[in-house]
Amino acid sequence: MLKEKIEDALDKVRPALQADGGDVQFVDVDDEGVVTVKLTGACGGCPMSQMTLKNGIEKVLKENVPEVNSVESV
Image (cartoon, rainbow, N blue to C red; front, side):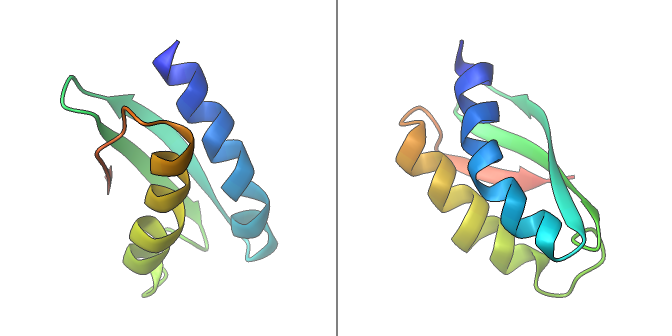
């Protein structure tokens, strides 16, 4: 159930990432509410990817899924 909520929230940020030639892939979520994602395409090597991760993806996930505490990329 939690994973589905996370996927739904990621679907909200996906169009913006795809517009820039990138994407985000859900990897896992642990018991502490730490979500692991993988930035792919142009996002994978972008110098702004950490900012996108924290200010974009993490913010949207926290707003939509209260169980999420942080987002990390692999």
